[in-house]
Image (cartoon, rainbow, N blue to C red; front, side, top):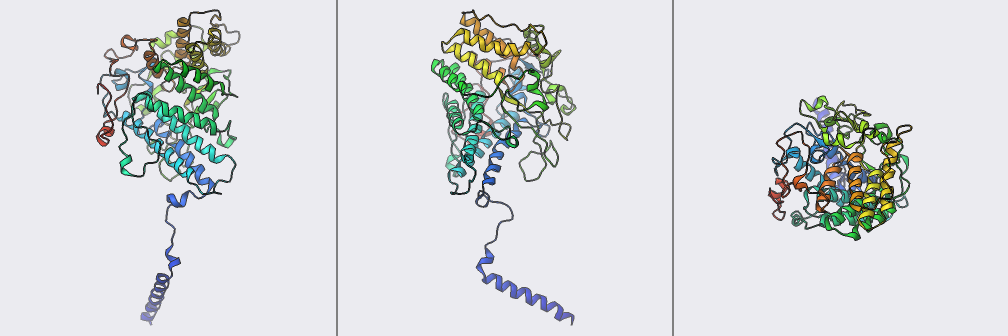
Length: 498
């Protein structure tokens, strides 16, 4: 009896196996996890893919498992310094194998690859998958904007690296050559231009923070100003003004400090921010967000500015004496920016994620004050009205002084000034105090003004906390191409001096 009880189930399983083996329809099984072929079948899949391109920015701003890379852009200028022997502070010990250098480069190309893959899927999507009017164009605009932003950053930091604008699907496409001259910047300009024609004026509230026409036109104008500096081209400055003129619906917020607070994000002054957040499963700052669990790091990190315990004793970043002394005594921006030499931006009104290390306070990547001062520069450098340029500077100064009831400092610059060199100095001074400690803006400004002949970095006072800091103008204007890239791609050339 026991044997029968065993044989019967076995016979059933055997006969079932014969049936299913002969039934071809039973062999057409879905994979246990989504594949590319199965994923891009609904509109929502494309929206998720768009978010995945943005998500790569988190690998730039997070704690990075106790290896945050913020010094890469915060330290090289003359606004932020540290007492530590940091390669981006002392310059002379910066080598192609340096970790943050490799991380930024790798993440930039991972984002570019995601954008290119997304663009490829959009271009080949079947009719009827997109059901929301205009969403397909919006998605294309987002991918182009984010790709353009990475090309802009790569050009500024490395100067030369491959321009990859198509999805890589064969091995012969993995060894693209180094770009030449302003090719990276030119591609960024093309991407921003097309993105501006596709992106919406704004998104609905649940999608607030995604790239808009203002984001694209803002970066388009900024890239053109940079090109005008490097190529000494009046036409680029004129084109920048045209791009800036298309920005609408934004304004300087009354309180300068609201640009750096967790509870006033994506405000009227913001054109683009990294959307730092708290994952539902927990902000684990030791895990990246590149997997399918609701946990990992999607937060930003500001520990470098507040001597946070998570530095584990590493020297933190402070403002330079040069920055502290650049503020007029009663300028309200000074106390928002500094307490003594400690940086207060982002940390004075911060909110930690669940981890106690990460922050949900968004890094403001592009804001309207930056645009106003860039436009003032473009007007001046294109031969435009000096009064118009001064008026743009004064908009920024007016907001600053009106933070204090009855405030008189900083006073307006004289609209009757006609000396263009002096007005240019006003612009440079204003950008220093207004944008200090933000997104490496000061370093990129110094580099482009050096290229334009406005300043000479060969004898510049970087005001480093390190007495052994040595800047070599023939070498350190660009970072080295990462050693991994040089080893893997024979068509990529190393920058001079490394």
